[in-house]
Length: 449
Image (tube, rainbow, N blue to C red):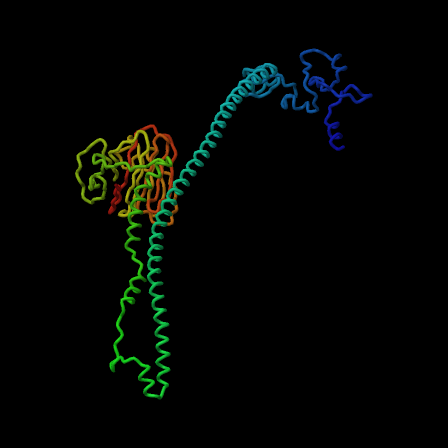
């Protein structure tokens, strides 16, 4: 009921219908009156009688300065103005359009804006649809990889269980063989025990007899000396039978594990899990700073307090850095770096176009948009374009794995032993890349073969 009442209150009634309440269809700004259909027919059609939708806020349709009807729109300021504003007001001399013309221009402009928004919306819908399909594709790919990984470990488990079964079978065989021997000897000794028991009882019975003839006739002559007890062959056999020989078990495990190690990679290939071979990475002496010593087949870099007096080359760094001879323009690449001999280190990849001849952020790897790095300086972190991200780890990082997927557009860093993902950069590569290293004082880095 309240909603109906409020709706009636919002209705604008005809000014001239005094006997009855008739809803107005137009309002004349000049007359400041609202009219129904009948009174509108008889109203003046003169241009100064501007008709608008029914309203009670006629003041909003008049110039607040001159109290005249707003008829124009200033092209320069975009303000809605009256004729006095054009002649004597602050918009004097400005280009103006009639309100109707300005309205049509604005509507045409809104149409263009709407068309552009609709086009942008369509493009956004297409991109959204592609992304949704991409999400499904990623989820499907992840599910497929998980299934293949699970199948690989089932294969591995089956091989290990088979090897375990062979080893335990050998243990069981030896146990059964030993138990047969021991049981045979036990039975022999039980029989002998019964015989000895009978002899002991018989001897004790004779001891109680007082008649000499009866004792002498009932006891076999064995001489006066007591014979010492000898270790019988049965005792040695019992000791031998009770031993489990671990040599054949160890041999089964050794040969089985060796064969298993050789077959794991084959199992991985069978499950179509791609292999990641290490890139044969070497350091470029023509890029090395004069206080960097390269050795170990160009796979090790150490800081030297003494200048190496390398010949000046366009590629040589003024900062204490060195790049790889390897240039990456496509494909996937992986290498590992031993950082255990460095209290501080920075490593990653850099564009071939990185600055070489100044010692500043344009040159330092990790401090510009041409390099992506992992570092350790009091804390472990990742740095690109001088933006650092702290990375937490449960153990000391002694070696770092770097995986570059040039075409896929990402660089990932891993802790090696135990293997753990540390950080990934996602971008689009357009320029050739090198592995890059910063060498601090009293520090060494080594590329792991």
